[in-house]
Length: 444
Image (tube, rainbow, N blue to C red; front, side, top):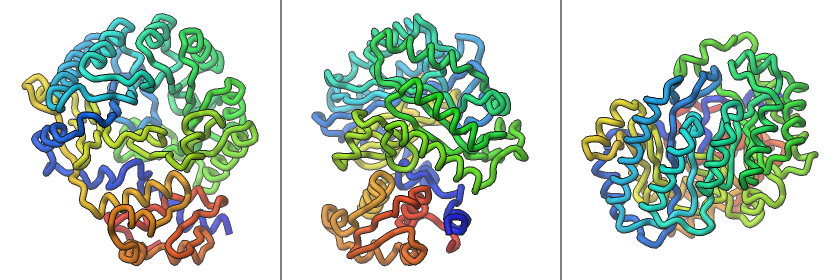
């Protein structure tokens, strides 16, 4: 039965539902003027989250699906940081006052390609332009191969309190196949280095479904990671889209595992991590019992946003840098992906918003249902609809695939309360898709 469920519902084209509606619905009808107007409307006392995108890496990883630029020189990075600082000033001036900040995330790319002094200056600017909460969570993504002692010291001095290390796999055969060779010693040294400078909360990223990967190598990588005891792990499935991401054409497609093998790898990693004391969070995260994600899940306040699973409860996310996505009260906005276009707009004193989406009341209800399904594997549709002042029946009636999901034993439904069976959590995206009004697809 598991094989037939896998074949029927595990569709790589389904969205990951980090946001709803998805980026595919964004359009140029929402632009810089809308973003400016929405920024001015933000409540002055509500905490916000900040995301800063640093799109540079020192080497290319063939599996990567993010818009990044490879540079061996510092000049492009310094030029970009100059524009980024100007964008921070522009955005801060549009807001009603110095907005309170409870969460900051540096992503990319490799944010730690920034020189230590430049990172400290960037954090100082953010603190001048925004009102940081004393308990603000400040996280940065790190390539353990390039982290220096000086950078770890700067991160600690800047107030960073969480680091996410891109590990992906410890198997040297897999590493060579994706052009990301890094030793266990490098990862362990990075963890130790961060701990020594006061950054105690550590995340690891692992990937399954990579070329030449096997169940055994996935389990061994998970076990190696567990020995370093990160607070949480994100375990992603590799998405092979060479038509969209040209660098992935360097990967040997014949070496990629099929859907059944991918599912077996994911299950084996999950079993390894759960046996080691980690709690499974939503679709693809694992956290120690005292980690914020595990506590948020237990309290029923786990969130899903453009960065994945989060304990961050802010309604507003402001994105800085190329391709950065923000969520403001009225909808979503996204900056230009191209660095040149982004830089021209900011240097001209304009926001770099290139597209976005204006939320409707119906979008907000569907987003709430999808978020609870993705976070809790269950959703009380009538209660969610009541909280938004609407009737549940139209939303349940429009979710035509629910009956088929129930018939196949994936979900249980009682009076509009939907619960995904634990053994089928790997197809949670198919359940969420039942409430996606924009998913123009033929029936399964």
